[in-house]
Length: 100
Image 1 (cartoon, rainbow, N blue to C red):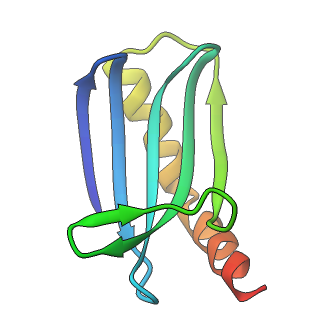
Image 2 (cartoon, helix red, strand yellow):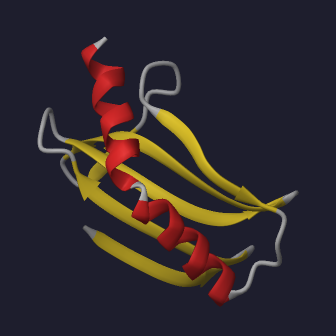
Image 3 (tube, rainbow, N blue to C red):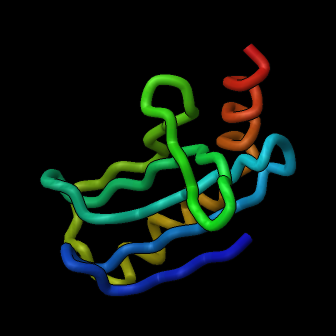
């Protein structure tokens, strides 16, 4: 599990990449600013060499946390950690998505 927190174009953002161990899939948990506040989402991408590919119609995508808050470093860290605390459930949902 690799987490990076940085200040991007739209404010603070966090990104964690977790290897799923099958079919070169990785689960990416990201926290960033949106129009209504902060959002954390989880998506599965497929590793293809140095690139990550995402199929909009077939790959797993789930919004895990949404909060109307200011985009500060502390808010991003706290919301991202909240999503990572429940990562087992998110990972189970992603695995079930590909088993169906």
